[in-house]
Image 1 (tube, helix red, strand yellow):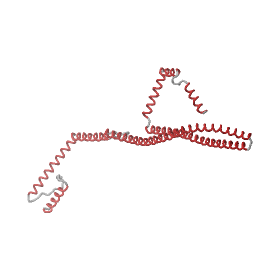
Image 2 (tube, helix red, strand yellow):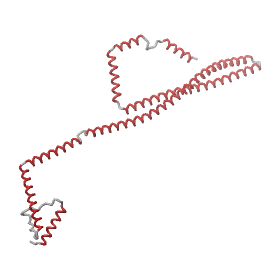
Image 3 (cartoon, one colour):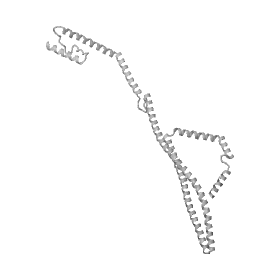
Image 4 (tube, helix red, strand yellow):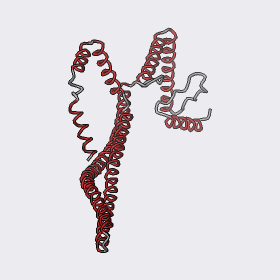
Length: 313
């Protein structure tokens, strides 16, 4: 009863107090803040700074922060639910003790009435009156105890509902926490896939541009070097052909080719007659080179040796 009265008084006091947010001082303070450019600039800078942090933050760290926050909330909710359930259990213990006290008071009241009747039967009226007064005292205590039991039963019923709601809230929050943990695993996997895809895309871009990072030469650079060396060699050869020495080498090569052709005609003419001219030792004219390969050259040498065997010098 005193607890209910105290709660009612506290509610009455809270109802009499004006809301803090609707006071003139709060309205004036809000107006001053809106009118102060420095305050507006500071709030803008804080919002921009927070946005930059979110933009450049590591997703893995943000995921871990979200999970830790969810775990802290679940722990706080669990502690609150434990307090509610503990209050319900405490009320049960008080109710059981009060019921025991009521039973004792009922037994004491009955015993006092029995003793009063026995004393009156023995003719001891004074003793009987004393027992009856004691019975009345026990009965008054019994009435108070029974009223307390009714109050405890009401509080116990409310605590049972609160405890049941707390249990359900903890179960729901635990399920949500498990879902968030599963979502964390999924997000971390997606994050790793995104990083891998970014690396693949960067590698493909480097290959498409033929550009290698750092000091490593690219394929395009190597190709330019090779083409430069090739064109330089072509230019040098062209210059050598157009020089006097180059012309002399061309004339010498042409003379050697004509001499070889003349010697070939001589050998062919000697083969048509009865006798074959002796083959010189190479001092007069050089032997012609076969243009058909090593097999043809060996066949010609074999034929020459055979003719030499038939017509010794």
